Image (cartoon, rainbow, N blue to C red):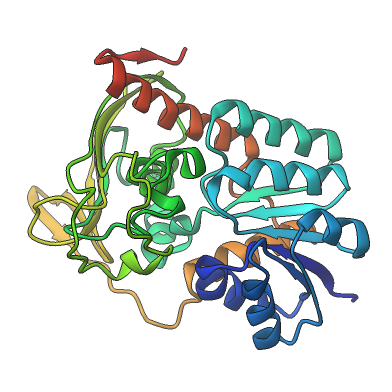
Length: 354
């Protein structure tokens, strides 16, 4: 079988650290060209990966290369532009999260995918952890009953990515930790809850650490810090989501706040059982034979990394071996939620989505 020919747009740290190893670990693809507006990034990655052709302008790459797939790992503001351009040329697209910086741009992406008949998938790597895959099967077995409420978040004590760069510039990123981290955990929680439709949100957002110098989280390595640069996004956001089936979800996301430790968490409460996921530690909270029990599943260390699992799933979908685990339409709903939380934070009022 001929390998899928992949062109990369965006050769920064997220590509180098997560996307490149994922693409290279598949026997079904080959990276044939790399583009980046900062050409040295493209040249560095091309040299490492044995790719012979590099471009400063992705449009030149799309015009001159024979491709099957485009991988998008640019700053957020360009996700929709690049994805739509690739789809309109009849290419499949795998894009780093978030889907887009506005619901309107996310909808344009979904529409372009529908018109082209090609696959558009946005990174949802947290669905591919061993804990998430097990928990999804557990929930679908009916063991948790009706999941009616939950809380989820990702909080850092000091972990601002690229302070002063594109991460902290709203015109480039669309927002702070809510759009950076929230897209991950809100997605997983809603997926676990059976994908109810969001109908209303309320939220609050704060910027209190724009001048913080101390960074202790390993996640602060993303992006490039620029002294004197822009910081016009939140560093903490909280919120509440209501769904059409009566369920609800509390959320909290921060790059910096005075908490004891960094924590990525999800708690779901069902009529038969609950669950608690704190970083990689999963507990099932239930009752067996009249006795309250906390069950701690054990997971081995041989699983493929979640980013690679997600990209391998995308490749399998392109090859028509699997059905997509997420769709462009669900991405539109995600960006609608995030946008409405920002709107609520600014207005101080609940925002309806129905």
